Length: 344
Image (cartoon, rainbow, N blue to C red; front, side, top):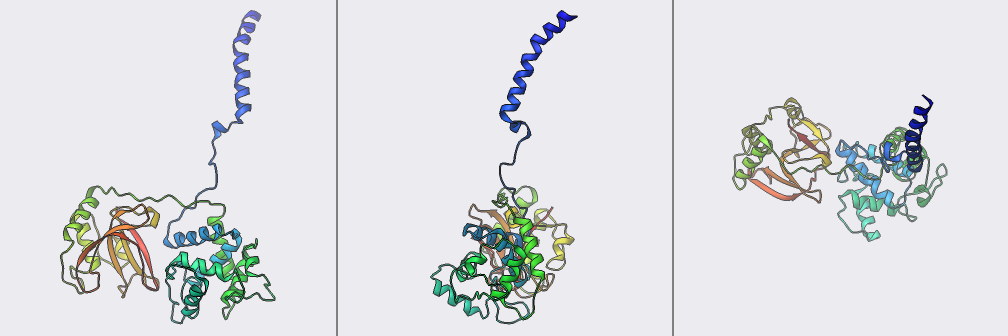
């Protein structure tokens, strides 16, 4: 027995020593794995996509995450939770944009004074203006005795609740205090904290089954004109319903929002959009109503630059014309938002 144990030891022990050495050398990293960096935020709505764009732009400018979150808490409430840059004051009034510059001419004047180039209706340009306002004196951000931080000091705050209220008091200056903006700031901080990049674009240009057929039918209609009016073939939503239903899908009746839900469609984020999905402009105030500004179109492809290939009907309104665009970007009217729907 002792001879067998000695022989066993001569064979097994060297192997065990080698195994322990390998584990010690590599620390088990090759076994357990690592994500190698910050996790990516899960963005499921257009508002989250817009908020992430603001977060990313200001991170590049050296703002702390807490300062950005404080700003987002304010923008959340100022835009009614949409984070849409091209937004007029909800309920009337002269406010406009992410932080509701009042009147709108303040934004336009700052754009001229700052020599910042770009479309004032976009998030990127408005974020540039927001940063510019905090980079000097006399630009709209005014330190107070309660929050005596200069604009540059604000950018480096590390208390997000203090940042939310400081921006509210020093820049927004509403009639009544809004402590709820602190909670909104916390919400955005929790979502984006430590993230280094957004989810990868899910642009799938390969439509199959009935969606492929629906796209073919849509392109076959391009250049044709149909009658317009209530429930007429040339209306944008009726055209999309015709292409989907004739292709073999099911897009039933209902309101602007309920029609999709009743048909089993689910809302997807902009980054998840695929060929065969449908874009819908819906009212922020009354999402299910067919109010002026509602528009529906079929997405036929996703481009590498984030634009879409689309087919739509009745643009311009009243024409009943079916047309195609190769590089389309959503620009919802004031007080509307862009929603993307996917049918089963």
